[in-house]
Amino acid sequence: MLRSHTALAWVLDGARTHVSLAGDAVVAGVVTRDGVELRVFDNEADRMLDEELGDAGDLDVTRVPWHEPLVPAGIADLEEADVAAELRAARACLLPAELARYRALGREVAEVLTDAALAAVPPDPERAVASRLAGDLVARGIDPLVTLVAGRSRLAHRHPLPTDAALGDRAMLVVCGRRHGLIANATRWVRFGPVDPGEADAARRILEVESAFLDATVPGATLGDVFASGTAAYAANGFDPEEWRRHHQGGAAGYSGRDPRAVPGIADVVHAGQAFAWNPTAPGAKVEDTVLHGASGFEVLTIDPRWPTTRVAGRERPLELERGSSDVA
Image 1 (cartoon, helix red, strand yellow):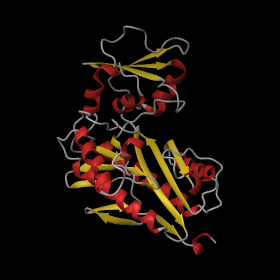
Image 2 (cartoon, one colour; image 1 turned 180 degrees about the horizontal axis):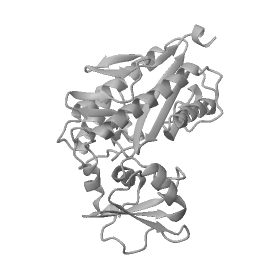
Image 3 (tube, one colour; image 1 turned 90 degrees about the vertical axis):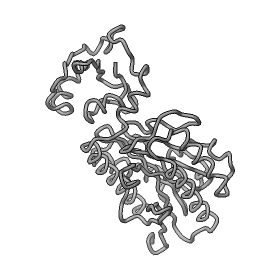
């Protein structure tokens, strides 16, 4: 029995399975060796069949009255949670059509971040910037699952839900956008005015921490091993060795924001052709992109040629966008 947006979007080839972004899926899937019985609330069935599922193929569609349980007890022998690790492994290696969708999504998420950073000015409230991010995502058919903005006064918060605070001279923008079930994650920094040497140094060192995560992300390694290598790099790059405890560090990506999120000792194995979004952070410093582990190394999916980059261990990584006084006059 598949119930989650993550599993259903994967098995249904990117179909949208939600009405409310905060709600449960309006469909469920009973998977057998012979196909899938798709259980759909009757008031959603016509739209789903017309706009999301196309040719239903081998799907056996059951319409369920909206006032009855979508999934009666005992309808399946196994629940999704019973085989969660196996399902993650099954969807880890992305197929060519999925890769094409992911590349397009990543590029557009990066473009939305660039556009917002170029349009922002120091007096802008965080909510105004978040509104632009969310609106531009929706205009491209991307669900704005996460839109975070922190101006100068709120950079201490790792998950800064936007407020009415002004951006000030430095800001962090974070987006997690979903389309065709796939989720692209990225973080960008913008500065108005002179560079602060201490902050620039921290930004450089956090890229080295991310590099340790990426270097360890090789097929066959466990995410637990990658996590250990990446978190050890905090101390090696002048950060508090316990910094990793103050925020999650990312993990595999795809049909969930992290699929799964890496934690100490986790046994999931890295696959070739799998996406990742590592997320090392420290006070005033963070880096995050969605990347693909391909045959020739990592391909950054959330990339916009307009954004400044630097090379770290042979990889193009994002810098802080510096906006001078003439840019914001």
